[in-house]
Length: 354
Image (cartoon, rainbow, N blue to C red; front, side, top):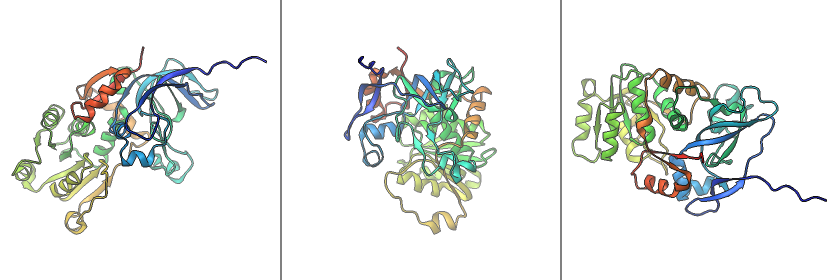
């Protein structure tokens, strides 16, 4: 009788227990099935969701089941493919759609896989990409075309959220407002302008983010804490009646109420930001009497949004690299999370290549 071979391992950022923080640990390299792709991770983006998991807030505690490898934004190179995989080969540069649907429910079969009721999200419901390797179903793998910087390919997930939010309603020739200039809000500014928005107005309390918004497509930026800002905002809209389209990206109760206050009668509001608790609305005054069209945005359209993201980059309409304010080794993850918690970074990319 011979001793069994040791299981090969890799470094990974793991939510090891139900408490604040993450641990850099050695975990087994994932195995792949016949329709899976094993990807060697090169770069990963840190998302606000990862910060919630790091902090172990009420949402994380109710959703995530430790131990879990965290992370869902990545770019990497195909290491190995399952026997039934034909679309990818070792050496391909790829990213991946982190929302994994069942593939056979009503929503998946009608082109709405992004709202599959049994959706599993990498880094939330199953092991994610903050590791040297990740296994993904081939249907969720996305080939990265030459000309797209790898650090940008690593953040296609939030970029796709921004693209989905902007493109959910017509923006060409219209006045668009963005509430909240975090990473996704800033991406939305750039996308809206590239998609033909006549004017992009940004509402954001943090000065450095307002400045960045003006550099990424915003025409005017407003501090909601300043007296008289609403009048000034309306002064930049046609006939001072409000914005044609409002994109709510902050998820704060104040931001949501601002969205409905600043949209014009008959306008559109798209809601991407997720409030931590229930938000009360005056449906009659804020929506019904104003005849406002409201859209909830969840994830990305698979894969319409991915194609849109690709074309905007390859046609040189966008450059998202200025939004990546920091890049560092995965070993420095504690410093990275500290910067994000303090609001001193917009988008951080972790490098996993040795």
